[in-house]
Length: 567
Image 1 (spheres, rainbow, N blue to C red):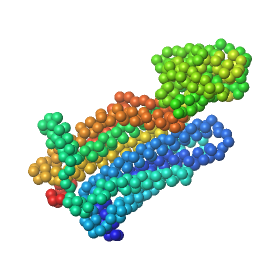
Image 2 (tube, helix red, strand yellow):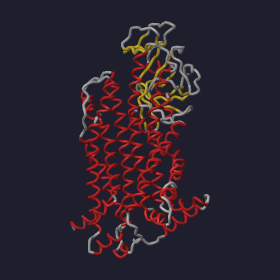
Image 3 (spheres, rainbow, N blue to C red):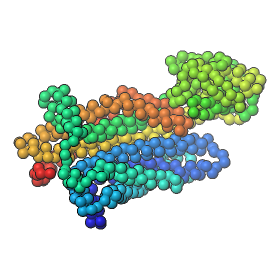
Image 4 (cartoon, rainbow, N blue to C red):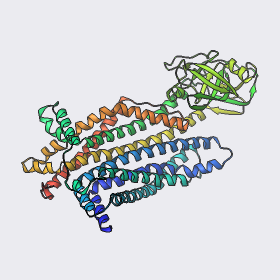
C-alpha cells in the first residue's frame, strides 16, 4: 500500500506547475482571510470589554465590523474559485492516468483506498498553504493596523485572532478542498480495471464538443478556423477561462466601486450641508431660535423592510433654508415633507429596494406607524429619515415647536456640538476604511484572476504539446506556432470579457449590497466606462505576460523534449 501511495503521489506531483499554482491559491485563500482578521479580533476583544466608547473608538469598531464581513465574503469567494481549480486538476489527472489507476485496481486495490490517497494529498497541500497564509497574514496585518492607528487616532492596537476564526481559516478551507477531492473520485469510481486500462475512448460528449467546435469555427474567416477549432475542442478549458475572466472582472469592479463610494458618500454628506455647527440636546428645548438657525426634532426609531429591521433616525425640521438644502435625485430643492409622508435616505432605496410611493412601516417610541415614501433625499444625513415635524411632535407627545437639535453658523450652548471640521474629519476617516477594503479586493482579484487565466491557458498549452512538435517537424517557425496555437486565446479572452461583463457588474453590485446590509453601513455601488476599460486593459496585460512565458516554453519544448507520439 505504501508503495502504491508513493507512486500515486509521484504522479500527482508530476505536473509541478499545476500543483504549485494550487498551493499558491490555497495560500492566497488563507492570506486574504488572516490579513484582515489579525487586525480585527484582538482589538475587537478589547473594545467589547469597554463599557463606553469614545467617538473615535466607535468609528473604529464600525470599521472593524465592515472589514470582518469583507474578510468572510472574500474568504468564501476564494474557496469557491480554488475548489473549481481542484476539480479541473483532478479531472485532468484522472483522464491522463486512467491506465496507471486501472493497473493498480487490477492488483486488488479498492476505490476507498485510492480515494483516501487523493484526499490525504489534498489535505497536506491545503494545510501547508493555509499555514503559510496564516504566517503571511500575521505579518501583513501590520499594514491595516498602521492605517487604522493613523485614521482613527487610536493607540495600543494589537494583532490577534480568536479561536473561532483560527478554526475557520485553518479547518474550513481544508475540509472543503478535501471534500472536492473526495467527490472528484467519482470520475473513475466503480469503473473496472479493463475499462480504465483501455485508455481514452470516444464518447458522445467528445463528439458533441468536436461538432460544436466545427460549427463555431465555420462562422469565421478561413485562415482562423484551424486554431479556433483546436481551442474549442476543450470546452472545460474554455469554461475555466470564462470563470477566470469573470472573477477578475468582479473583484476589480467591486474594488473600484468601494473606492468611489467613499467619495460619493463624502459629496452627499457635504452637498447642501452649509451649516458650521450641529448642536444636540439630551432634553427637549422650547426656547425660540433665531432666523439664521434651523431647529429640528429627532428620535431613534426602527423601520421594517421585508425581513429587515433597521435602526434609523426620524427627523423633522421646523424650517429649511440655505443652511441645509435637502435635494432629490435630480438635485431639486425639497421642502419639508407633508403629514403622512417621509423622505428616505439613498441607502433605503439602493440597498433595501424601497421606492417612491412605497409604504414604510416604522416603530417610533413604541408606536407602530406607516408612511408613504414621497421622495429620496440624496444628501440626507447618514441613517436619517425625514418626516413632518408637527406629526412627529404629536407621536412623541411633545409640544409643537419643541426640538432637540439646532443647525447654525455660530457656536451655541448645547450638550454635544459637532463642528463642520469634525464632520468632514469623520467622513474622511470612514472613507479610509472603504479604500483599504478596495485595495484588498483589487489585489486579491488581480492575483487570483491572473492565476486562473494562467491555469486556463496553461492547460490548453499542455494539451497542444504534441501539436507543437508536429508543426515544428513540418517546418513551422516558433512564432508561427505560437500564432496558431496560443494567440487564438486572445479573442477568446475578449469574448469571455464581453459575455461576463454584465453578469459581473450584477454580481459585484449584489456583493456590495450584501456588505452594506451585513455591516449596516451604506456603500453606494457605482462603476463607469473608465473602470470597464481598466478591467479590459488589465486582462490584456495579464494575457500578454502569459503569452511571453508560453513562447519561451514552446522554444524549450522544441529544443529539449524528445519527440514521441505514442500514448
